[in-house]
Length: 97
Image 1: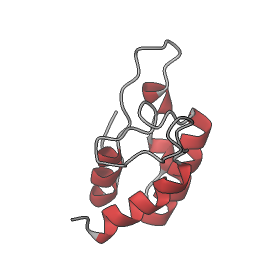
Image 2: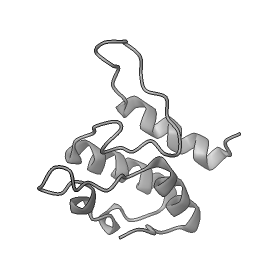
Image 3: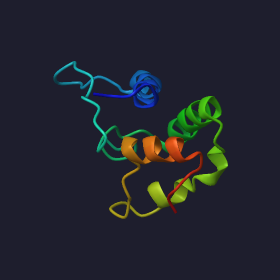
Image 4: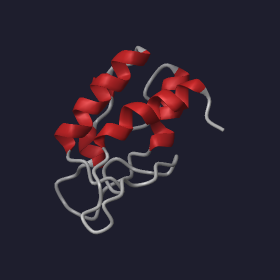
């Protein structure tokens, strides 16, 4: 069961989830869902989502180095997961490098 913080984070992410071209369904969101790999969000959309999400919870979106999650070379991505967002919001600061 999700608490109110998690629930709000999921609500903010949901509009950014596109529907599958084949199944016409939006992906199921879990804590392990990554914005960059699972949802295939581009860096600009991720940055915009983080501004919205972090401003609502009083965090600084500039603390997130998106180049870690969107490196120039494909295959070197580190997942930027919903669980990472939830734990950072709960702590009041971005917890990851």
